[in-house]
Amino acid sequence: MERKYFGTDGIRGRVGEGAITPDFMLRLGYAAGMVLGKLPGEKRPGRPNILIGKDTRVSGYMFEAALEAGLINAGVDVGLLGPMPTPAIAYLTRTFHARAGIVISASHNPYQDNGIKFFSATGSKLPDQIEREIEAVLDVPMQTAKNLGKAQRIDDAAARYIEFCKAATPWGFSLEGLKIVLDCANGATYHIAPKVFRELGAEVSAIGIDPNGRNINLECGSTKPGQLRKAVLEQGADLGVAFDGDGDRVLLVDRNGELIDGDQLLFIIALHQQECLGGCKGVVGTLMSNYGFELALGERSIPFERAKVGDRYVLEKMLANGWLLGGESSGHIICADASTTGDGIVAALRVLRALSDFGEPLHQLKARMKMLPQHMVNVRLRHRDGVLEHSDVQSAVSDAELQLAQSGRVLLRPSGTEPLIRVMVEGRDRVQVEQLAKHIASVVERVGNS
Image (cartoon, rainbow, N blue to C red; front, top):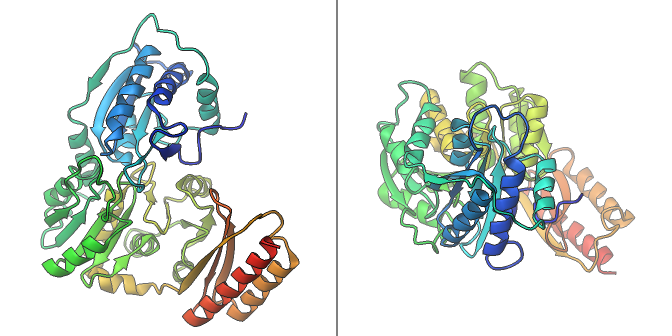
């Protein structure tokens, strides 16, 4: 059975449209309770329990109540975590031995969107088969359980997660002497991240910590780091840290106001593991990871592989290889020795630990990796069938690769949501890269619109 509602990252959309309605969330809660509440292997007494957490979107209150009602009607107990980062919900699901954890969030998207993501009892994404089983129950009429579930608010959830983040650093690790600006995107880290960094000794200035339900990711956070750059420069801070709305992504800004993306952060963490912690087994990036990142790892004998875009695929390849580090250019970084999903706070602390052990400021350490110029053109087409296989397109790609002479790469990737083909070229010469990308895009456009 094909999945009708679940995508690669849960269910997401505009509030009030498609599956993102209170009625659907009520039925989803019931379906999830019926499936997850009856999974085999449960040995603990009493009813199964499922946790619900959310980011700061105003619609989260409505969907939280609907999911809660559906779960209770299925005979499942509910633990309400309130506004919490996505990785915190994964962690707390394991900590409380819950049957599952539910995240109400649309991550880095605007407040008008919302979505649902499930974590299994181990804090990992639900298997596809379980998602299909939940979808199969969505259209089954609800029946009130003979033994209704109950709900309780978990008041110490934030404190537990703060201690978890701090414990991801070595005993005695301190940020004393560092002045750090945090941008919490008016999202789920607003009451978590400032406490973590302050309790580790940093002098913290925080922005994006006044959520009103409608300002999440609004001109702030990792997708809009302009305010953070300005604050770092104005305050003379050592660096800045930007999270997205649900706290699973992070980007940094150095003291010169320059943005440090996910590839650069992954490189710093991998370099630290390789030179200070006994070695790095390997790193998983994506098809969009900068070629300079791959070259820099190769120069240091650190294995590197690419996965399809999406944290699900990154984690799958990490697990298959037995590697502990992977992520995306967007700043979604998975440190598998600490967390089962991307965790912005943990990733930022890993970078800060590297700065401490190397004794170098961020702007110097990042210079050990040279990012290559990258140019992307989005080509909108009437049809995409057969375009990538067309001889003219393949010839244009081959010619470009020949000109790059093994010092760059070409990637053509269909969009998963729009009638687009994304043409990306990387190389050492910016002008050449842009010219090659535009030429390939023109060929793709001619073939796709003929």
